[in-house]
Length: 174
Image (cartoon, rainbow, N blue to C red):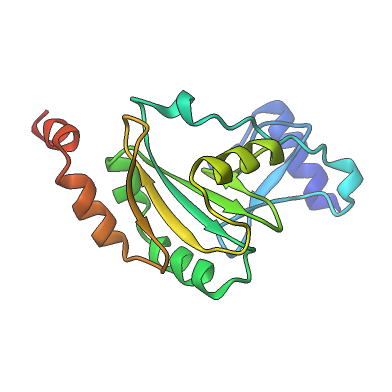
């Protein structure tokens, strides 16, 4: 408890903040062993539920999106897919690629931030993915679907596909 209080104090005073901590005092998070952000507070009532609105159009012309749909985090295909992406952060960033996890049960996330449930339903509907299905969908900067896989896919395969796109070719020449 003392550690949590000290961390909150550091966040409030902006001293010693690192990239592992979010400076939003109303919902303190820390990166856990599975590289997820989890609430520091042990009492869920002390952490406000702040899900972000998620609109695909807001990413158009800025980012590519890699949508990973799964029934829940315990789904074997989902776990395998996340394992395949685990060490690829630099390659994601280099390609302006954001990971969006769309789960039927549990917390859906875009770049680690919780997504509003209504927006999750809209994304599922747009890409016609049923709640029990596993799917990986690549969305280009133009907002259109570029690739769809129903099994876990190696990150290198996705990166190669992105690197072959005309827009990415232009980015690499700059």
